[in-house]
Image (tube, rainbow, N blue to C red):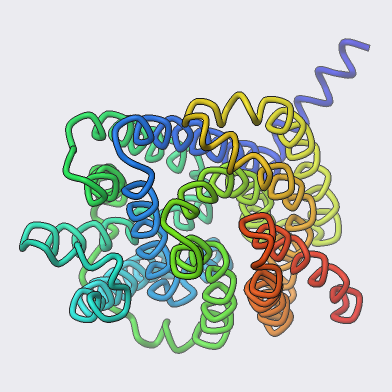
Length: 405
């Protein structure tokens, strides 16, 4: 029996999908733990209003990254493993996405006082303006490097860069004490340090050039995933901004903590899906799909149980007000990860099949459903918004049989 168990785990360790998925899930666990302590520290140092504004700014910049990535995070997973000009593809993706991020961040600063007056404090000084732009570019390099490392079967580097990011992020709140922008700065400086690490790892493979022929060759696939990702990011990063607008910054703080705890679970099927896409050219797609779902639920179900059992205790670290206001939405958001896993993994499967139109349809249902149901259920407060997200996932799953596998 012992020998069979050892042989079984030996096969699991040697399986690229399980190996890559395990590293990325471990990475997600790291981000969840660090995110928890980051917001616990900030809840002790800043007011609920400052946390609401700071988290809204973080979410807003994350939304910009979704707009500026041009579909390269998925294109790299699909094409880099078999690309003849790997260095050119890496350089092209980095230069284009970071350049567009710079332009978008600068453009937002011009309109910030009118578009999001609650966040207009980013224009209070030349230092805050420069920091916002630099942090934005660093965040993009940090984000897109993940796809590069996964596609090259160097997933451990994803974990290393996040370990560095985590160590820096947890130490900075004690030194940055200038209100809501301090929260954003702790997040941004840690990304900047990690981006420097990424530059060191990529080294000579990066060059300030763009291979436009390569861009044209991947345009259709990349743009389809670009728009699909944009649509999906609307509920992911737009909900805190939406709550700040329709409710209050305090409500945003109370929602943001359970939302971030749940996002840690949402990342599990997304990370498994990334490895599924990258490994799609090496193994049977149907076999990979089955293994992906099995691995995903083997991790996510125990995680939900643990977080629900200890949920109130975890929220108590942030203060009694978070237990009162955040607990009603936490179990629902955690359970919704069971639903979200289905469209998340199937979306990557559709990428292997080049059925990118299906991905756009799924993400449209998720985005429109989240804000539509959330608006209709706004009388239920934060619980209504969480229920709107859950119902949108149910609707997306019901749609899948009509799209085909």
